[in-house]
Image (cartoon, rainbow, N blue to C red; front, side, top):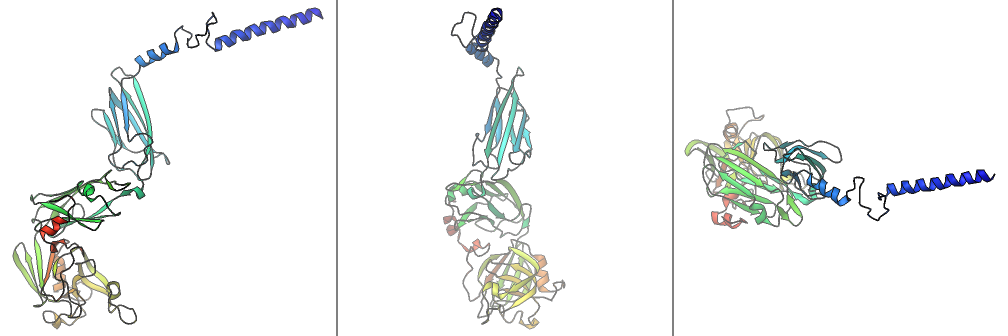
Length: 422
């Protein structure tokens, strides 16, 4: 009994000693039992190890923009990865929610990377970038950010379309999807230039529309270039632009047609020469046609015209007219003025009586398939941006913002509406 108890005691003591050794070893203490707790197994302090590691670290320094945690990043040029002291080896960008990879390109000198296209709004993205220095030592950087939301951004819808060919009266018209309070900031990041060298100035119609034009009509056969550099531009408090785009369009031949409502004729002039004189029927004495310079903004081989949509209704509230197949219609104003073919009126009215509800009518046939009519001829000879001038009508001059009709302002009035001056 006594020997058994003694043996158990010795085992316990040995276990205690062993546990003590293990404990000291786990704590990194030396065999002297000192308090130097930052020594490693090689006898170096942790600070010495850290210093050595720092000296051996890659000299490549990666910078990711936007900064980590940004939540209002632009969707065009804000995103970029750069490196100093080394070269980029790999950059991976993904949409956090879907894991979709965003294509991008490392520059030829391997010093920078950027996405190949526009990002999505209201989307969180993650970026992992790897670089090496001249000794092949690797550096890695990670970041994430969220792009601007639709509620906190604005875009401008513009006309004419990129690559199109238009008439000499076509302005560059930009309609913003949100009201712009800092017009100067926005306009100063938009440029419109012509290969003709004409001076081009912008004019604001309210807080959401900005049109550009020269003093006189565009020069025929010139090229006009619109550049939107709006990414990150604050148009109103907390609302930034997201567009970075350059587009060009061509100005075709010069065609200006003059409607004389009193004489009931229209003279079509192409490149300074009279092309044709056409008999017309303009607005009746009760519904006269606007005077002024108007630009063709849309073309329809056939379209429906319902008087109720433009305020012409009878006692029952129905449209005074509803023609479902008006041929060769071309829009002159937003409010509903067209120059179009007319097959329902007697042929005798053209050149003799003004009978319309304010439009300019040309002789035509039902179906819009007879190329021999004046309506068909004029439609085929016209393009978006051509000018139609109406004179000698017993009505006021059309408002400059009713359609693309800013030509009805004097140059001084036009320039006065610019946020950046001439």
